[in-house]
Image (cartoon, rainbow, N blue to C red):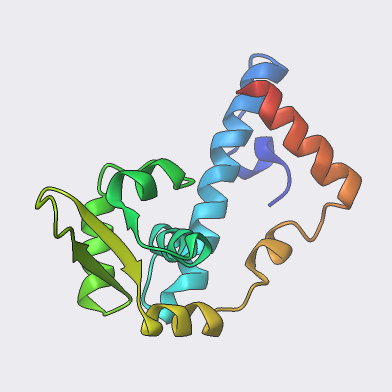
Amino acid sequence: MGDLAKDINSKFENNRVKALLNVIYTANWITSCQNEFFKPFGISPQQYNILRILKGAGQPLKVQTIKSRMLERSPNATRLMDKLCAKNYIERLPSEDDRRIVKISITTMGIQLLKEIPKNLNHELLAKLNEEEAEQLSDLLDKMR
């Protein structure tokens, strides 16, 4: 891995097309790496993101708030939370005032799971970039969006 043209055995009409396909290809590679990293912990990268959001908030959050803070906007966020609930990593807290409002809170088990997960995944994915290159890549991706 390292040269898109060789990796997918293809030629490109121009560098813009190559860059776009490279972003898509790299995003899929990152997703694959993340899925493998989280597999031993029995959660997905999206579920990890939900747990991190809840831990960082320090208080129960509405489902919509969690969805809006997720890195990957997921239409199945409720299903992801159902699975986390079933594993006792989060809990639903119905509002006493309004039955339509449910807040989500991370449990002690969820906090413990986060402590068990190494923090080095992103370091390994970016190991071949120095700080300046990482900043340049981030700036270019921001510019693209």
